[in-house]
Length: 422
Image 1 (tube, rainbow, N blue to C red):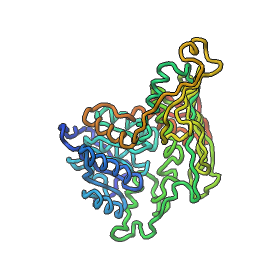
Image 2: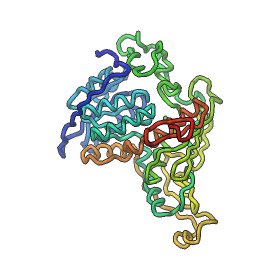
Image 3: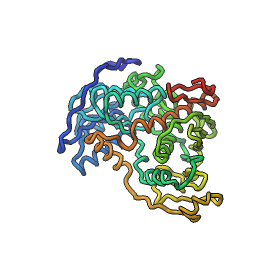
Image 4: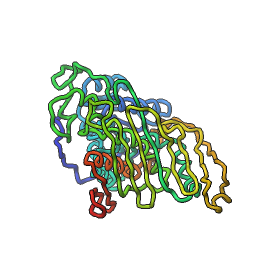
């Protein structure tokens, strides 16, 4: 077993090219991080590979030996506690990165440096600086990076983008969305294996030092390991786990992904007091092209608000039920009574319903990633689009924690609490 990775491990300057894929070659995929989400995504790749013969799972990695053993048996492949053993393998073409958020960027960056393409679970990373590094490294290495918000493979966002580009809402004014849930036990309170830990024997062993990685060093805490999304060291809570599924589709709808210029956030721990992150959270953001975004969420109430984009002449309703991960049979353009004469002459004053194709968004997202590996074209949720969403939600986390309105300077990727000072 290799020693735990140092906090600031140096990345190699030289870039390696990946294996050249033949038309009939199966893409060989390994998963790093095989908890609940990682196991689900790996299962989606394996199923698609069985159906299409396009890919196969050849390796798994986790810091918990029980998860390694389980997934080794499921996929009849090699397994390890150390992600660097996966990255050192020349037979691995792509990696799924489904670790806690604070490891996302480092593993993805190192994977690209070794010539591997990356399916990177949302959120893309943990900090704005990491987002900047990912954008630069994709450009430098020419690797394919698909961010794993499968929501963006839904047809409604792409139909919405065309509708907006066709002038069907007029001047874009504001976008709104929500992500609400409720449960008795509280969000992210997943089961804890009480026998597991750094002193556990056999399959109960957890490599706690590797789990912490670049995060603050702490004594082993089972709640932090099994329920990491409740803690700032490893997650941004609602913003990064759930708002990414709203912010990324909106950037697709707009046609030209945008960085926010000003972000403010608020909320609090109102119902579940066993965590650091808020159970209720909302943000307002402004954009340089003259529109705003308003997002609302609570983990203690499940009633959504409609997901829509408001224009001066009409509103475009993408998800009337408000669930951005749910299918909508159509999107609706709803003209304003005060719409311009020119608009009404072109589109009329009645609602326009645009049919949306139903699809398995996870399967579509996986297929798009694998196709992008073969063609070297940009995937659906490429690093540039995802970075725009990441900056929004990362700034919202900072705003909430600092109690300040924050401003973003796109030219240097800097955040400040004073306009024009970033």
